Length: 77
Image (cartoon, rainbow, N blue to C red):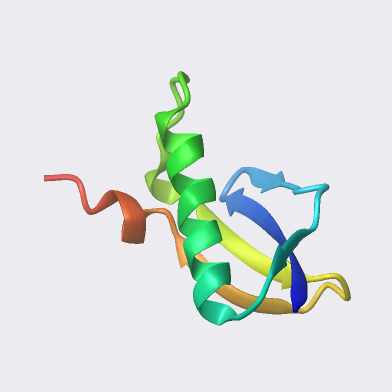
């Protein structure tokens, strides 16, 4: 089992996740990352999330993977 942070960034800055999420494998980590992205984009805000990326990092600060929000949102027409 691993513990990951799901930090998010765009060209203007970084949102730091302060809670470690326990995951059993990479598949579960990807599922949780997708959930984080979906929860952010469905929350009421005026934010254009297409320029954002989620960074899954372990508790040592090493990035495990990056997930552009567009991979969950799809591309604008």
